[in-house]
Image (cartoon, rainbow over the protein chains, first blue to last red):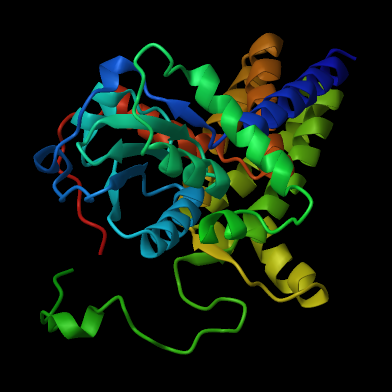
Length: 173
Length: 174
């Protein structure tokens, strides 16, 4: 009898945790001030002239491959945007200083190398494109909160929900 | 014991392009649906284990432990549920279209193996609480994989490196 309850409790944990993850994974989160800047030297690769996606991956990470593919595609369609993939195991210094705890974790850097957004978990294309578009806005130190940016993509998702194609139109616009 | 001659490096090239079976395009890759199917079977066995309690739940737990061990040691391609999926399930459904590196599910099997072994030890030492906790953790991980495609064990990999890893120079991906 105990076991039945333990099993049910475990399944409830699975459902709650799984749904929470589905909702929050890949969401654009405005970077905290402490995350600051990354330069080409730290990255071991040049920054994009407009923006740089820095993706932390690991060898045992299936969703990292999908995120890599998606970001590569986004970079191909947006001039000046580059993508750097780092095996976290090789750069534990950055992993620790940036507080990366899961893979994939993606940082979006602006032209100056300022970390502007963090995406934890498998990236969602719409969130990525929305964050990329918002880089042109001048960051207002007081207004840049996770809350504000986390909400914006939801509106877009709602608007595009009817056509079901995802980010294609948004990208073409 | 000594190998008679050193073969030229070309003899042991890993990138041989031998034509593989249609269900396995290239070694080191697995159909993404395989590990998820396996996680479903694992979840069922672990639920049965919990419901039966330490005894006779130790029987399905022992079976699951062997399956985890096969996946972790022999690789997911030779994990029994994976074999069943490839030879019995796949021919009846659509052919595989998406593949993933076998390293991630293999690592996850190893994490599952640790929990399962802890569960078995708990039974032999008559520690029911430890038994329930260990099996419940394994069930949560397997359930998340089966229902949502999440690989908790894989996510813990980098965290583990971050906590315990020194500055060991890792080998480059070949």
